[in-house]
Length: 161
Image (cartoon, rainbow, N blue to C red):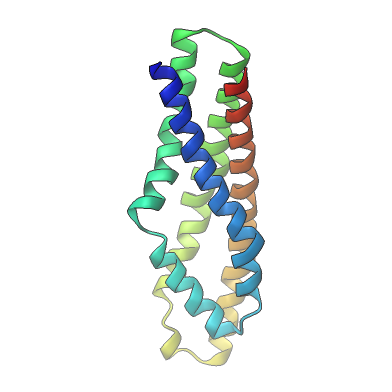
């Protein structure tokens, strides 16, 4: 029973964060990409501040903890089943593809953008900042979106076993 509850929480947290990244890829990035440089950077600064909230942290870090915990308990209580291998794959995908990509790629870009003072910059400086931010940030976002969706799919597949 406890293992089933843990599996359910794992699916819920990984599904929520996968859905956030997927929805962002399908809508927010496309909408932001249409803005002129200063509006784009200001919007990203605002979004980057707003995302740092307890609900985001709960699903983002919750998945980081719950996937490996589900993997370990699956191994400990049931053994090396097909579910264990899918959970292992999901844990690895999430850790490297989502967590590390965010920590080592997206967050440094967000921090640099936060330090950028739009009101004190020229149009040329704003244009350069957007070029330095947008393409790498979107690349990291695609990586973590794909990794998260695959990790979520692996968790679903594991729990269907």
